Length: 173
Image (cartoon, one colour):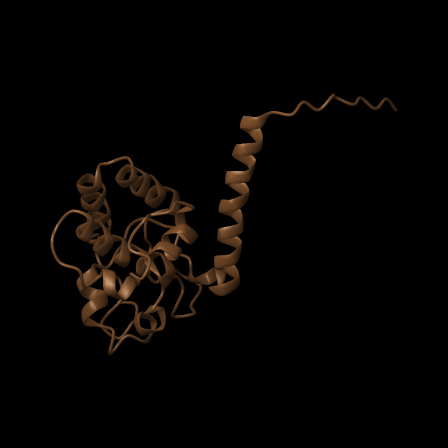
């Protein structure tokens, strides 16, 4: 049997790419250690609004369970991108923000985090909220980071308005 050994050439750009990908994978691995894999929603036909999460925190135990999570950390876990929101902003605070611009983006992303992490909360093996793919959300976050905050906020808000598949108590409708 012949063994061929190709000479390895150091490629700085490749190493940077691998480091970036590795960092993103590490963030995802960390997230999956903290949040059960069944909690990730990967679909794309449903979404609940910031108002749903704001108004149902007392009746829906899953909503209350996710309160206090830092928005930047959650977006980094989901998308691998650093949002750059205020470092103390939590997802439950973000859904209560008013106004446009970055506040609209953070509000929409707060609901997006809830929608993404909702997953199979009812335990029946089906997604309770079939939210957009994390890669789609990453593209929208990148759009905002590239300067189109309004367009990204609108697109994320549209995904959050696809129709909420859980009632005020967290039960699948």
